[in-house]
Image (cartoon, rainbow, N blue to C red; front, side, top):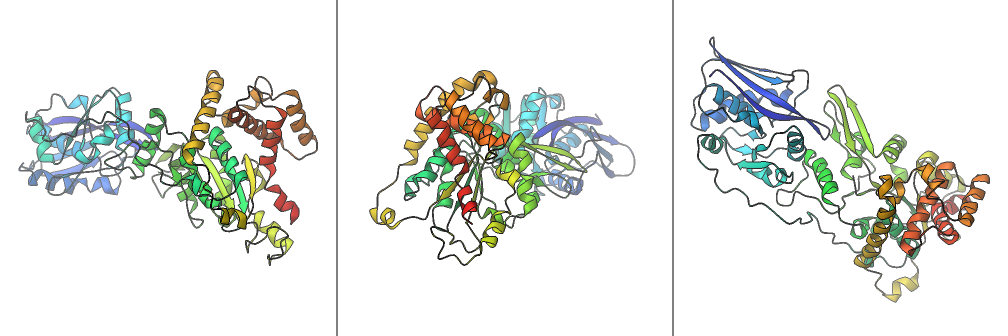
Length: 512
């Protein structure tokens, strides 16, 4: 046989397409041609594959070798095609059986000595293969646990090309990893909300944010506890269900951040980029092939932007689209990658450049103009998309000297999960998961607050204290407050609390 076909996967974003790896051996001067828009890393596979085959005890065909990656118009990148290319060449040279190759998908990089090395993106690739009807997956042994997260597929892992060749010849692969039946969180939160002293209003805002996945903006002096509260948000959020966990894990797989021993992320991720990060690092991108950014790595979790006014204006405003849509599209010459980006955004800021604008402001060295200019770096359209805006008061001496432990994260998480259960039963028929996703039309009809609560937000709208978007944000917050309180419909007290938490940080600007 002089022609053999194997299969691999090309990823663009978290979506994958099946690639036919065709190897043809023809008479003529020995040569190797790789077709199908390979990038530099894939183009170098010729030398890796040749060395791996020779060092696995096999001979290299002294013929004209043409390897075509189809569809030819789809850009291919990375070293994950090495195994498929090597197997196709060996099968075309009749060194191994080729009858079952059409039912398999192969991924893996080859070392020069024939070892199969771990690659990124195995989880989304296996998902794509399963959707295409491929049920047998060949991966490096280091990627087996990740690949087995996909149900109804057979995953076989190998340490080397030699083991894979022996398996094709009828030898059972050695030491397959046992199948993990139970789901164990890859990361167990170690930070607890009980560490935060005082700050009852801010912790209440964090609890409401966790119930409805509402975005949160905290303004306060340095050392008041803003970062501590943000870092403990995952500890009060419910763990991810299997569908969401696989989706989150697929994004982290592409970024190369999954652990070999615990590849399924059940704990909501927490991502805190530095204010010097580039726009590509935050939103996603790259010079040629788009990569997920912080907004996608925080999918189903928390994106925390400390010292938010220090981020460039363009980066902050780039968040507006994913905040509304829940995904981000990154267009490059190689194609357009679409990544999920439904995250809970937490912004934290000092009240002024010196950070001491609090109380009567006597310790602050900034002018009122400097205060306004500092906070104006956060644009109005961005803040209008942030549901909760609270002012975090400085910690008092009484709170510090009282030495009283705050409420534990486990107790808060129990309330959050109970409130989530109430909201899920109510929202399930509309296709929404949390209160932050309720449509504007539904908020004005079947999900409206009681008459006195609606009158309150309508007056605020008439007085230009709320925008139309802000009115809907307050109503969504009111539903989360009502779910925590066990109310069937938001009362005027629920709406008033939601309105106060929505506008709390605006007191600072008014005081400047």
